[in-house]
Length: 89
Image (cartoon, rainbow, N blue to C red; front, side, top):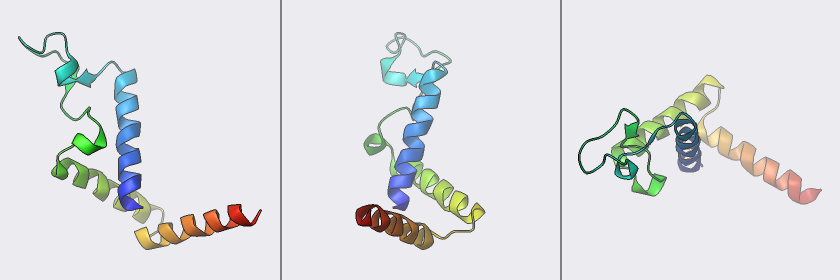
């Protein structure tokens, strides 16, 4: 679950950055000669991120959960309970 939350956090960041006009370095019109101020290396799908960047997001998820007073295990259990409740309806 922590991995999925980290991935979702990255997807949200991608959307926010795109709305602000940022783009992946390899999609910049200046790519072959130079780069612009809106080029960002991290604007790639989760699967293409270097492991160290993914780890930053994973630590961010842990910090957010801790702020909410939850451990990753507690959050996982809450998700399982919600799924069970939905099935029982």
